[in-house]
Length: 283
Image (tube, rainbow, N blue to C red; front, side):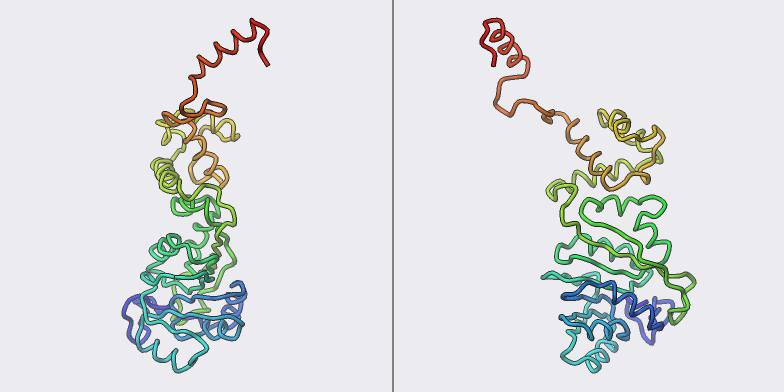
């Protein structure tokens, strides 16, 4: 896969596994929606060529200076070629992202992308097992759960190792990430939500890890979850519901139907309503 470090001559130990199967290249390009596209780690330009043939602007980021020069000779004005580190490059406008990701920087790249707001979808070629985990196949992970309220993760297929040169020891997997049109948790609550997720993943079982959260057991029961449920078993919607329940159970949080700040305490309001009823003045 395209190198992140200063690679010379496509050395395998530096992650230089380029796509050579045109069918796979066409398949990946076909998953990228229409519109402006950002390719991270363009390498020798196999995927860039497919993207450049489509309508819409294409920006290709590559770290290796020799390959940058070759890409500029090949594509001219058709593609904007940027000599930069994909882990430091930041978007300033809405794009769809696509990348044949170097195996060694998968998690740093995912974190880098998830922390940015100027992209709507990302099609990423990763190691097969990593792609499955990020798509929550067989259970979610801390990283996926941390970002699930704002993004959807889907597995779009497996890519045989024979599609690469040099051939890696493992197959690849295509991960598709899409920004949700409607977030399940408000962006302003992201830090609190992610802290809750980290706490939940601090143990093998969910409820023991959340023993400091009042009402965690009642929440799990209302969700139809078993007492031995693991954090990896929760869906995106259940994580959002857990966050909402944690907020409602927090000290000082207003319970449903509670008086707004500055209003009379609930006991005083109930006393007043009782007195009115006795006088026949209740509404």
